[in-house]
Image 1 (tube, one colour):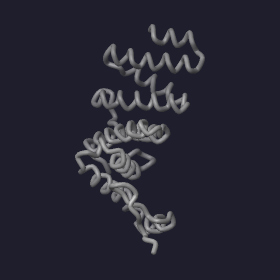
Image 2: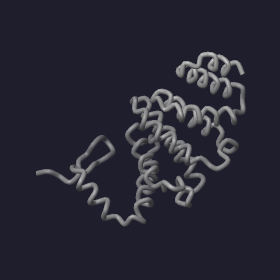
Image 3: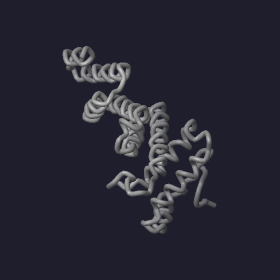
Length: 193
């Protein structure tokens, strides 16, 4: 006898058929779905090992990212400023897990979601988190051939770095990017500036 749900991993279940999942999801009123995703994500965050556990971390980040409204990235009050910072860090951890598993497109999605959750003055208020999210976005986009993202993110980093070490790291990434685009002289110029 086939069941409705089946266990897929240590901490999660899935419906045995996509149509069952879709039908069940459609029973939830549209205006309640975002709140439900947030509750599920928050519940998963109660596990103290969530950031270190690939499955839990990506599952929690996925739930949180589902409750962000695509028009305003969660700026509509569903997240408090503290939650936004927590969820940005969660997306950073999920992206790193995905990179280690060679899921570069998925990793980029987590890093970009983390960036959208940063506060308005994030380079001033959340400098380290901003820098790490932007650097990881550059690295994974570079690995996945998304050159337009690499260029934009590097420009953003370089215009906000606070220390010479951070600027040097960004310039090294810029040089690697330019050399990969066969812009050798620009690559050398980029590191020397």
